[in-house]
Structure formats: C-alpha cells, structure tokens
Image (cartoon, rainbow over all chains, first blue to last red; front, side):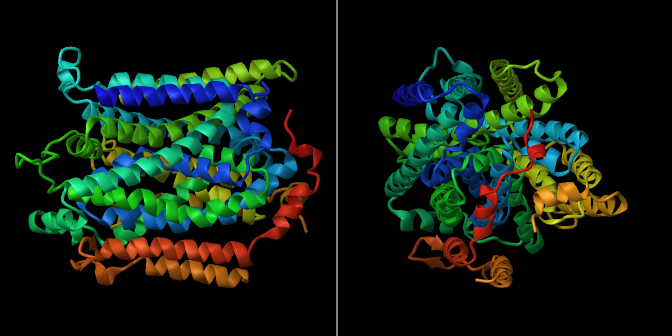
Length: 504
Length: 78
C-alpha cells in the first residue's frame, strides 16, 4: 500500500509540473511542438537522455540479464554509447543546422523538402507513426509489470486475480492519463522539463536501488559469489551467444537516428554547442543506468529471502524481475521511491514520442491535405492533440493483449527504425540520393521487417537470427541496397534542391 | 583532429567492442565484477573520452555558421 501511495504522489508531482510549465506556454504550434527552439545544453542533454532511457533500459535490461547473463551490457549499452554519440555528432548537429536554417519543425518535413517529394512524406509518416506504437507499448508493458510486482498483496480483495497487486490495465490507464495531461498542458517545454526531472530521478533511484539491494544481499561480492555457485553461466557469455550475433547488435542503436522524438529534441536546440554534453556524457550515463540493472538482474538468479526461497521465483511474470527484487529486498517506503524512479524512466519516453508524432501529423499530414488557409494555428494544435490521444489509446489497447518480453519487443521496434537510418545518412551526405530511392528503402524496411517479424511468431521467438545475426543487419543491408540502386536508376535531384542542402 | 582520424578511432572502437578473448573468462574484478562486464564498463568510459576529444578537436564549427545564414524561401511550409 505504501509503495502505491508513493508512486501516486510522484504521478501527482508530474501533473503539477505540467501545470506550472503551462504558464510559460505561448499557445502556438511552434511553442507546443518545439518550445520555440529555446532548449539549452543542460536541458537538451537531460531530456534526450531521459527520452532514450525507456522501460527497455531499466526493466528490459534487468530481465534479459536475469535470463541470459552479463552479455546484455555489451549487446546494448556499450554499443549504444559509441553509436548513439556518433549519430548525435554526424547526423544530429548537421540536421540541427539545416533545421534552423530552413525553419523545420518535424522529421518528415525535413525529408519531404530535402527530397522534394510529398509522396515520400506520405509513405514515411505511417511507417514512423506505426513504429511508435510498439515503442509506446514497451513503456506501458514495463510500467504495468513494475506496479503489479511492487504492490503484490496490497489489495487482496480488489485485485485477487493479480495476487493483490495493481493490475497492468489500471497502471497503463493512469500512466497514459498523466502523460497526456502534462503534454497537453505545456507541450514540448513541459515534456523537456519532465524528462529532465525524470532522468535525475531514475539515475538517483537506480543507484540507490543498487546500493540497497547489494547491501541486503550481503554486499556485491557475496551476491556475485552466490551466482557463481548457482548459475556460473550467467557471469560469462558462453556458447549460446555467437560472435556474429553479438556484433550484429551494433545495428540496433542506429535506430536513434530515425526516432521522431529525437529529431524533435534536436530541432529544439538553441545552438550547436547544446549537443556537446549530450555527445560526451551519453556513454557515461548509459553506464550509470545499465551496469546496476545488469548486475541486479544477474544477482536475481541466486538471491534468497531470509526463509531460503528465491526472491524471484522461476516462472515469475516477464518484465517483473527488477520490481520483484525491489519489493522483496527493500522496505515499503524505499520500494515506493524506487518504483517511482522506474515509472519516471518509462514515462520520460512516452511524452516525447507522443508529441513528436502529434507534431508530424499536424504539419505533414493535416496541413498538407487541408486547403491552404483552412486550418488556423489553434485548430492545428487541437488536431495534433486529438491524434496524440488516438495513438496513446491504440498503444494502451495493445498493452491489454498477451504481454511480450520488453527486451524482445524493443529490439524489433528498434530494428525497424535502424533499417530507415540509411535514408537519414543519404539525405545529409549523398547528393545523388533521390526521393524514389528513399521511398524504395522505406518500403523495403516494411517488407523485410514484416517478414522477419512474422517468421519470429510476432515476437514470441526471443532471439530470432538470420545468417547468425539479428534480422536488423539484413534489414539495414536490404534498405541500403534499395536506396542506392533505385537512386542511381532515377533522375538526380534538381540543382536548386542540392544548393539548398549542400552549400558550396 | 582530422575527419580521417576521427573515423579511424570509430572503427578501432568498433573492433575493440568484440572482446572474444573474454567470452568464457569467469574471473571476477574486485571480487564481484565479471571480467566481461568490467571490460565493457571500461569500454563505455573510453568511448566517452573519445567523444570528448572529438568535440574538442573535430567539432563541425562550419555547421553553426551555416545555420545562421538565411534559408531559401522554399524551406518553410505553409
């Protein structure tokens, strides 16, 4: 019950933050979706980091370490530290420069104008928005699992079917409601403030959770020795993880170069200098979040309660390992605070994702399809909010279906974005890239991703491989090939377009 | 730092990510940190140091100047 109260208090604090930022809101689409391009280095760094650390990083990493051991850190965290910063450096800064020069608001707007093609925009938008739904789903599934495990036994009469824990459908409803409220109240400025606050909360609570859990297990040495005795295979990578399989995870972090919400944050930056802390500190922050989560996940395989039973019994619900460790090894108040930290990580991504697709819908679909002058700024704002609410509802309804592993679902979602990344690189660096080439790459991503996802039983196979590598490797190769071949076979972009994006 | 050096550093870090020599190494660092995990934690710090050098010595300053020039009228949407 205490955990539930603390988590509710945190959600209320976020609502208050949304209402406070509403005072600064200028009630224009430019302010709602881009915070009037006023985000400085500290806020940009914290909000991008808060946004990119999802349930995947907190709940998924712990769960995957519990299942397969320490290898998960090398699969995702150390690769991401290198690749994410490379994308910020080579793609983010250049895109910010072009965006500021031409007054761009959205990702699709950039691609439409760079390739001078409305058709590309209409093909790209549904793919980007469609991939956001599973991304939102990761957050809702993670939040539901965490709250159910943290509040287990608190409401035995009201929620008997979930062992007295708050059921995932109720958590999903509350989280969606809170995020929509503060996003509607203050737009991107509210989301950036909330993300910065939440990044601080989840880093601090994550470190606190690690310290408290390791102390309860008799110290880190005792906790690891217990794993060495019971499950030594969790402390090495072993034969199950192939070298090519391990290397192919390097394709997954490319996805950050096509996330709509990351583009949105890049475009909000006040100056190029705002990117510097983000580029340098991102690998360190990945370390601070992932290392404790991976260690706690591995320790969970052998952690015992005072009565000698396992803290996380075999067959525990997917995605619940971290919350079960927190619930089993800490007191109710601390458990509530740590639970709020986990919720913070999850919600800090939902808000930006929703805003980014709302922004693209307003600027790149509604405004393009409506007759010139038919939509006032206020009406555009209303349409954007309606679309955001519709997508949030769709993700919420999907979260009520059979739960999947957050880690596996995340890898699928990121594979789709990663396969679109060659389009971003070509748009910024390859003068010969054409609209039809970009459309071919987008269609190829949909076809190859759809085929692989179907072949994996729609995500039920936790580790599908193709030629010993993740499907993402083949998807990126196929979309790159489609982009290059079709671009070379079609008419080059006009000189006027090239002058605009490749100044001498 | 010239671009070529930056790219060479990136490729080197990409290769160093493949620590196949630690695959089955079950030694513990400081009594609790498996060697494979300790390597990748140190790798994350080395990556941050690399990017610090990159933003100091290979920063694309020309992009800041380009951003301040006026975009073409075709750049803005209605």
